[in-house]
Image (cartoon, rainbow, N blue to C red; front, side):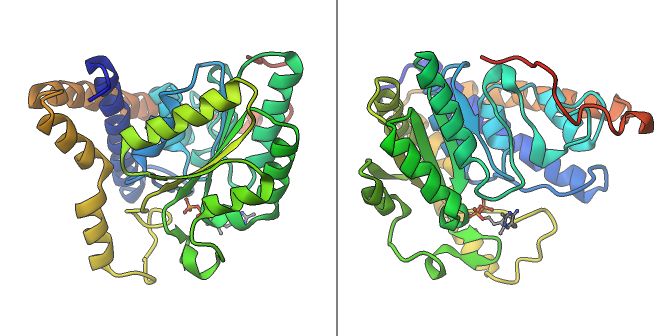
Length: 326
Ligand SMILES: Cc1ncc(C[n+]2csc(CCOP(=O)(O)OP(=O)(O)O)c2C)c(N)n1
């Protein structure tokens, strides 16, 4: 295996943090402690992890309504994330944004987004800004298969391609857009095939394999950073949980989900690979799991103990004055 022990541990730490964070959020939502809506990333952890392992803190990402995994992998603070999801004043948006609006400009996380297909032009703008400043930052736009049918997809890819901007478009094809299977709304076999229309590389990769995602993202990031322009990277995966927590999932069978989880779980794939290759031991993995579990419990305690924002703060922070940029 061409990865150092430290890299492998980092892959597992990030993937396991996302998994446990999401399982915890699921449990807390069903227990009535979390308001609003949450969309879980379970089953898609290898994508955020493999892509972000190629990024610097100063690189940018734009995310989606299913954004916890991207945010964790970019290095966000778990306490502030959990507090935001609880709607507490110590959260990233002082409790006024919730799950779908977490952002942290200090780590280049430009925002989760409740608007499907809302990230393309933000990512293109960040890439354009980096290019105009003469810096070698790259910008990564995560989006779903459903979002690839929005007009903003075409606008974003065309402009990034025409101006050779340092943007990587990462499609997380989890087979479903809410209740709609992607094959019924998409005319091509692979969403990556559309790259041809913009004269840029289109790459398909197994999104349940963190090594494959890492390597494909590495090539795309190097290309973008060195002035080669954008890449469309399609990661094939599967949404294991409902579209949102509470989704009755009348549009697919339990058997389909079970079969996908048994054969394609990215964490299990990773474990089998590193254990078979004797690259990490069961003990190494358990140590990571124990530390992650403790960090998530701490985040839940932090969120629970934090105050709600005060009613008189309702209209504060609607517009940002100044602000930090990377
Ligand atoms: C512009 C817009 N249209 C519709 C919606 C409602 N909506 C929320 S998520 C979603 C499906 C998105 O599917 P996909 O892009 O494949 O992402 P996934 O949920 O599978 O991660 C839809 C239609 C929305 N939030 N924004």
